[in-house]
Length: 295
Ligand code: UTP
Image (tube, rainbow, N blue to C red; front, side, top):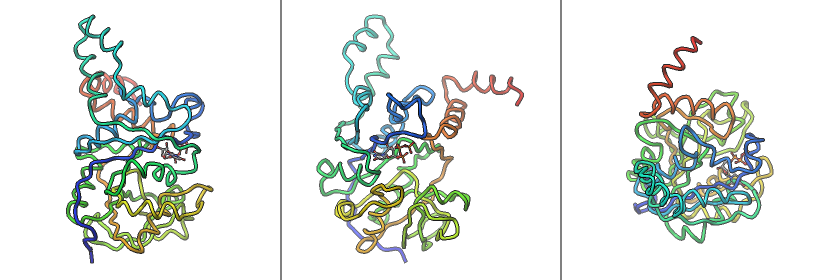
């Protein structure tokens, strides 16, 4: 049975945790933020900002840490660059640069130490306040005509509960994810009955794994304050969601689309090829290039 738990309130704010160390992508991430790696022609984090804004979100809260200044600069107004582009008559480039800072209200909060995703989300508490909000991870590129967050908002609008993004993974891969115990609501939609972070394949309750999109009830902040270090010694967001299940309904939606873990080198390469092939500007020539490789 699916329950409606809270009255529907529009989602206006998104939290983008970007304070991780990016160790899987070293040495590229030694001095540059992982979230600024360019995927075709935009940094990773711009994709999730655009996804959120297209869903009506007006306030983007980015959780940053040491060495992440480039993220703030990217979403800030760049007067010198804009003037130079205008002077030179590069109108298209000017529009593209101006659009970045005009997209939303941007706020930043520091996570003093990379203590885990749960801790990063908790750092945004004062900026989110007492309203439901979205969390988007820039590493997770989900390629589909209807964005992942748009798919999840439909469920949120129907039930008014927290909604987490899911993907069915191969049984041996569950060890890399949070995994749910599902109760089926309908095809692709489940009520989350329990949740475990990084289980061994033999202990996993299913192969439905949590990926980087969440719509969360603000009650999550109280849970985040109560959890202790979990898998990997980190404060895990999944542990807080598990605690929240005691008083709140949470749905899990299997997301449509191809998902790439752009925080890993191979996932990033795959995402680059997939998005470049679909790029209106580069796709034609890029496909011809791939064809000529005769793989
Ligand atoms: P990851 O699990 O990919 O960790 O974080 P990471 O540190 O970024 O990368 P690796 O595993 O060392 O290569 C998922 C998301 O959560 C953020 C990251 O920036 C990323 O967007 N995060 C993670 C934080 O903001 N703070 C943390 O303490 C951990």
